Image (cartoon, rainbow over all chains, first blue to last red; front, side, top):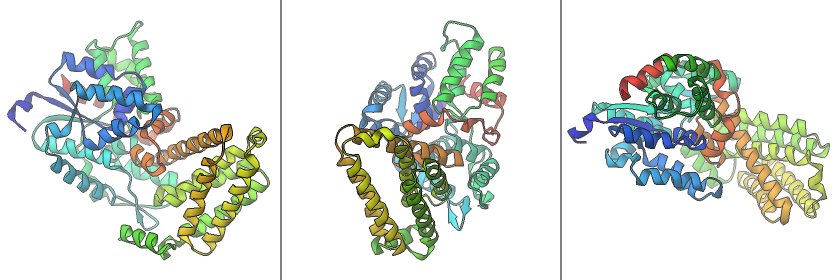
Length: 237
Length: 205
């Protein structure tokens, strides 16, 4: 990567983020953010491209959504990581992350693979960007990856309580995922709201309520409690 | 080691020693399912389907998942008496019952290959149906896959990993899971809103 990139701000998007934005009809927010803040780079990995474009293109139900995302890629609103980072480096780091993630939790003598290659590739991209001293955030709407990075103890407790079985937990391996800065589509839209990019008729509270619950009901793992708190905080920032 | 063992298992066509617990569990579940189908007890079938989800989440093996989806779908199908008025219903029911019996036999004989063929044949018998019944049942099976995926995601496996296991799109799972209370579980809240917003504005400006 060249020095020109140091002014850039990378948001590495997981497929869950693109999906919740798409299903909530809020993908336009990325385009509007990009117009006003061209230094912000929305980045996806090749594995995520497969999940958000290649596979849904083959299914009538989500074909339109896939084409809309493809349009954003063609217009470079969302960019593919191979434009910035060597594909082999991402693949190597992804495999390493998958291997480590697959050895953290063990039940009934079997290691559990709790994350997918797509999710691992986003973590890989983020880690490579940070090693290169780039400004970057990982944007993940699905719950498990976020819990793995931010509070693996909670993930351990969740697994044990749901599976009603003892889960062995290798917290030394979980340490690998520390210090990963994560936000969600909810925070991207909060940013857009504060910058007056995302505005609908009605009060601030109504707007925030509307877009956060839309994202929540379309897969963003944000709780009702967090939404109510955000409605109080965001207008004052 | 695990992957090597699975490959050997597939080549051998039988359940390995380490998978015998899975086999025994599946056998118990299918025997109970057969009884529940006979008495048209859809609630019992739902319970049986839920029992396989723990195992499916841990082992992530295709057999547990296929049986969880199958039993859940059948619980929905038998609760709909209007399906039985469809012309192809007797043919479907007869083929399904036969394949269920065959799968139980193959599990008893530890015949993995045979068991998997029986489960696949159930799918083929649906494809061979005509008209509305085929469409209804295919839809039920898709919804069953999505519903089971949501349960596995709720258990703590990631969205993409779960979608991949069940052979569905993450899009379908996101749509469904968003309407459940998964995100409202206290353990899911890993950082405060203020922290997350501050992080966002610190980086993006």
